[in-house]
Amino acid sequence: MAVADIDHLIGLIARLPGLGPRSARRVALALLRDPQRRMLPLARAMESAALSVKTCSFCGNLDVSDPCRICSDPDRLHDVVCVVENVSDLWALERAGAHRGVYQVLGGVLSALRGVGPEDLNVASLFERLKDGSVKEVILALGATVEGATTMYWLQERIMPFGVIVTRVAQGVPMGGALDVLDDGTLAAAVSSRRLL
Amino acid sequence: MAVADIDHLIGLIARLPGLGPRSARRVALALLRDPQRRMLPLARAMESAALSVKTCSFCGNLDVSDPCRICSDPDRLHDVVCVVENVSDLWALERAGAHRGVYQVLGGVLSALRGVGPEDLNVASLFERLKDGSVKEVILALGATVEGATTMYWLQERIMPFGVIVTRVAQGVPMGGALDVLDDGTLAAAVSSRRLL
Image (cartoon, rainbow over all chains, first blue to last red; front, side, top):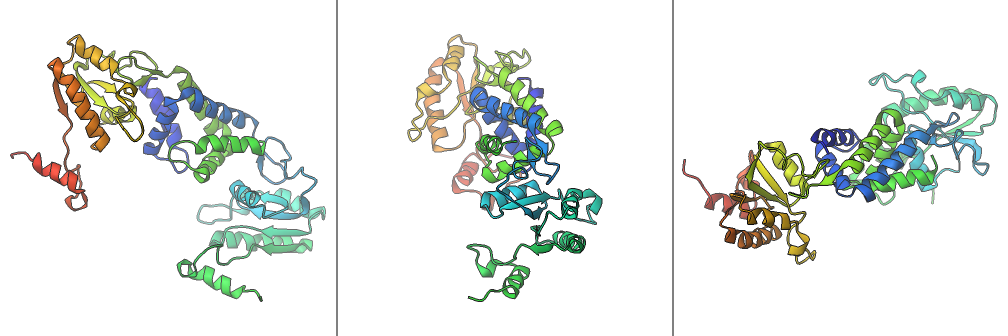
C-alpha cells in the first residue's frame, strides 16, 4: 500500500488510548501481515459495531438496542439504580456480576478543572425515574476521587428529597491487597468502616 | 450492540500485539464512544489496506504494488541489497533514511528452537538477483542475537561464492547511550571495533 496509506492507518491506530506511534506500527504490521485472517475481520467487526451502536436513552449504556438489554431485561431489579461514571465501569460491574439492578451512566463527574458542570452529566433520565417513584435505592458507584466525591455529594443532595435510599459503594482494602502498600485514605476508610465478625 | 458482538470486537482487538483484554476493552470503548469519527475511519482504512496490500515478489516488502515502490524506484541503488528480518526493520531503516539501496526481507531468522530452517526464509529472490550479477554489495542488517548471527553466517557462506561484498551493520554504543548500562557483549563489540580519530 502507499506509504501514505500505511501512515494514515498507523496514525489512526496511534490515536487509540494506550497506543503510541511505536505500538501502532507494530499493530499495523501484524494486521498487514495477515490481511485476510486478522485485518478484515477486525475492520468488519468495527464497521458493524460503528453502524449499530446506540446510547440507551434510559441509562446511557452503549448497545445495539435502545433501551439497552439491561434496561429491557425484566429479570433485573429496576428499582435499584447504580450510578457509574462511564460505560467501562458498567462493564466492570457486569463482569463481576456485582449488581443485579439497572444503571445510570453519567458520562463523567463534576470537575471545575475540566469544566464539567451538572448540565454535562447524563442525569435527566435518572431524575425522571425518581419522579415517577419507580426507584427504591440509588447506589452511587463513582471513583473515590475528589471529583467522584463531589459528584456523589451533589447527587445525594438532589436524590434525598425523593425519599429514596441513597448508598455508596464501600471503600477498603482490595481483595488480595496488602495493607502496607495502600494509601492512607484507603486505610483510614477501611478501618473506620470495619465490620464486627 | 449485543454483548457477544462487543466481546467479539474486544477479542479481535485483544489479539493484536501489545494489547491484552484490559487495554482491548479500553480501545473498544473509545471507538464505541465515537463511532462516526473514530471507529468507521479506522475500519475503512483497515479494509482498504487489507484488500490492497501485497508482498513484493522481489524483496518481500509490503506495498500496494508488486514490485514495491522501493524496488521500482529508479533512484535507489539496486546493486546494494540490505537484508533485514522483518518489514518493521525495513520501515525503521527507511524512517532513519539509513539505506539508499534496496532490501531483502527474510521474514524471519534461522532458529532451531522455533524450527525455522533456510526453506522458511525469503532468500530465493535474493540468490536470483545474485546470480544475474546485478548486486555489488549485500548488507546484513539482522539483530545482534544468536539466531541473527547464525543467519548472517549462513547467508555469508552462500553469498561469498558470488564474488559479492558482504557487510554487516556495526555494533556499538547506541546514540545517546550511557556505557554503564550496556551489556558486556555490546561494550566488547564497541571497543573491538573502535575507530581512529
